[in-house]
Picture (cartoon, rainbow over the protein chains, first blue to last red):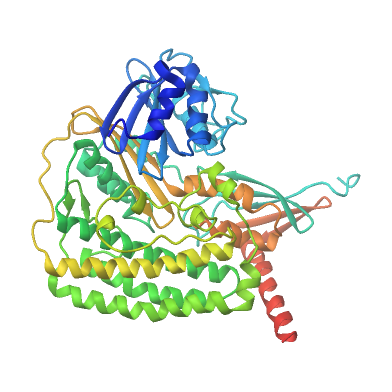
Length: 149
Length: 402
């Protein structure tokens, strides 16, 4: 099934070694990893060139890093390609924003910003989305390493 | 302010309204009657469910996510069990697949009828409101009969469903479904033939296909703008690939198209339910399999809720609780499209346009208009009155002209 999936093949042809750790959880769920610097190009390729829909992004705080998973849905085949990045500097997590390219990323990046303290460089408006506007700075509810009140 | 007579007027809409499913706050920037810009503020209803989920075991989470929404209360458990079954690679019994599909579609019918009623109410058709809620009642009765509850059915569990649909109940459900069809015909005819409904909704709040793609809108909002997506068909689960039905897609992208998509989808739902019941009459067998352990790993589950795709991502580390549970409801993507569909229209059309994506019924607790330094306070009913007046004027105008 791996060879037959055109979107992934195109992605590998275009980016080669930059697409790492491809993992087929099952026929319709594909996970892969890219470096921070490659994310905008990969995301734009999937969204504009291959016509995938941006479903959402999940931010996860783990021991080693903050992980962000960008889920792209291919509605023609029912597959989901999940692009994984690791923000290893947990004191200053930063990554380029995808909101300038497609609007759908705008709200979820605001949410990950307030929940996990990730700075999305180039985001048009990183104000609070779900938390109230006077929420204390630096108190990120989904971070595991802080004591919350 | 008096030096600049064309200074922008801002009308706040929301955040609280007793009719509203969820509080949201819209700031309408208007120039005269025209809306020029819309700011959306959400977060009034943030309950931290993703965080709570990390402290519940996998079976409890099913009940937790059921509480996310009161209208489509089965959508989130549906997507969640799909995610867990993806994570643990579980294949559920055939009978459970059909029961899940019946519950999912019943919910679509009652949710669409609820929306249709509110849409009618907001353009001044209170009869539509009452009739559609009347037809919604039997659907809720059936759900109560099957599950014990009108809402929050608690039917889903990882590995199957919790209650069976009894064979002796099936004829009654079939009959109630048949009785629903004339009601749907009534609405379809009303929407297709009534010149006033057409005048109020045609060409109003248009969302182009490009906007839908850019904002990644979902469900009827996307399908009314010509984007042919439906998770039930695209990423099949439960019994959807086993039966015959079709996805409704229209091109216009206005409020009218959104109404029609929903009305026609209800016919499809009735079709799906009747086919499922036929199969349920014939097959027997278990309705669940026992799931003892959830292995470490990741799972993604989706379900086409009445409003669009619900997306759940779950990560497990081998313990009995999720490490991370990401939930994305369809309204998260759809509400944002109001930024495109409301500006350009008039204030009196704003209500129905905001309402057309279905989460947010113009949560107008109090409307405040700043005009030439004088603060005018409008109550929620005044904005409704504006909308109803427009319908009445149109009606008079149309009768006068034959």
